[in-house]
Image 1: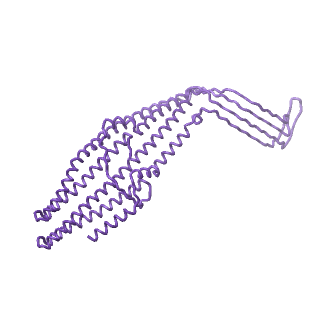
Image 2: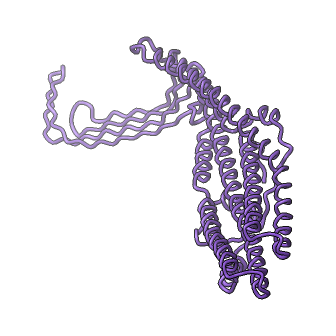
Image 3: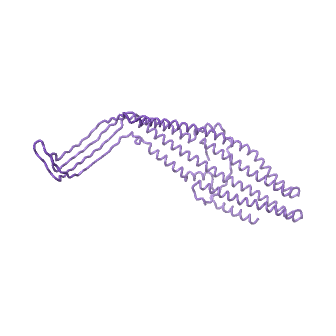
Length: 430
């Protein structure tokens, strides 16, 4: 009894000094610290930056260039006038500068398709971020309620230990009046020791489950937390509503965007077959100076404007093959969506079957648990009156433990199914 008291005292003191953690706290910490979510947010930011008409090539480009070249040349010139110019080591300078502006006027609507594709990429990355968030929330909820489940097992074990203590006290009392022997005391003490060991094992399981939760939250694994919660199940979920909501799943929406992206790539590729028309304008400056020769200084500057037309004629069929590849990628994206939809529909059906079955069993198991409690109490009363043996009390106690464990397990199984159904249908809340 002293050893049990010390163990439980340590456990409860540790919990008293631990930080109280609710499901909302756990989810918020995970969303803040999770590396996958941070990466997904960065990808959204990148695609938001790239979703710009300039990136798509729809804005003018302005380029400034300048070159200044100093040379030492040997000059040997004969003019038609009969004059000869010969100079060794003459200095020469060539200075050229220009500012050129180019504006795309037409390229088969490739810019329009590219801009739309950048928009779809941004939307797709947002849905992928949403997928990460939903998955993290689901993982945290399951691990959080796993801690609740393991702690509930501990409560059942503690009740069983209390019953074993009471049984041992009754045997000791009966031995004092000659109605029990040492064998009964030894057996009662063995039963109590066994359940105390079970409690120690369960305490380890609870501690390790909490460590797994802390790891999921990306916080120190040795942080002390205390969770005081129960498993409450939403019993209002309907299969039809979940099935109809699958299309709202961010992974499905992400594949919708992928299909549009591939279709736009087809249009971008097709535009490569069409002419490109650009308007060019700018300002040129040129200056050439030589220390010897017929032309000592030549300087020119001024604006220019013009059009450039590029017409693709033949490129070895590369564009045609790119179009064919883009078309196949679009078909593959559609097939991936149909496959994922079918997988989700199958998964939802099986999960819903598990959900409804667990809820139905819970109704029966709650009654079984109440009956097992009454049976244990009655067995102890009968044992006190010498109408029942230790074996009968032990069997009743074992039935009570099994009923308690099964009740908690069914509650957790129903909660797991509920979380998965809501995750798939994008209706997860906490």
